[in-house]
Length: 116
Image 1 (spheres, rainbow, N blue to C red):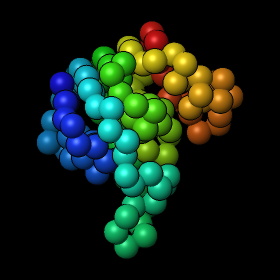
Image 2 (image 1 turned 120 degrees about the vertical axis):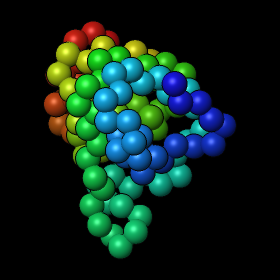
Image 3 (image 1 turned 135 degrees about the vertical axis):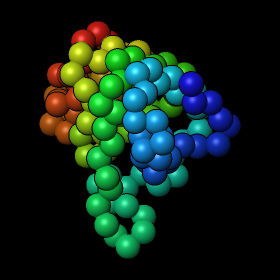
Image 4 (image 1 turned 90 degrees about the vertical axis):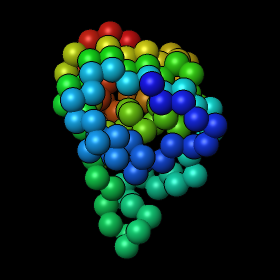
């Protein structure tokens, strides 16, 4: 589980991926908005963001997070979810982020969810 009163940025989730490559369950509890929300661009040297992939992730819980973390895990420019991952998210936030499941940048990750 990840809990903090400070925001988690994209680079933090990338570091988690590198430090714990075999993680199967990830629970994020954080209501603090992300500060660096540039989609597809890193903050340093204007390079592209690395797409994060947790290859063994089976359960992802974002129920106690703000909209930024839903975007972090749904946009394919930031995250590549594994197939058949069980995801726990706020449905209304997911509808908003995915534009009622019609947003192209979220389709591939939504299609990989086994249970939402």
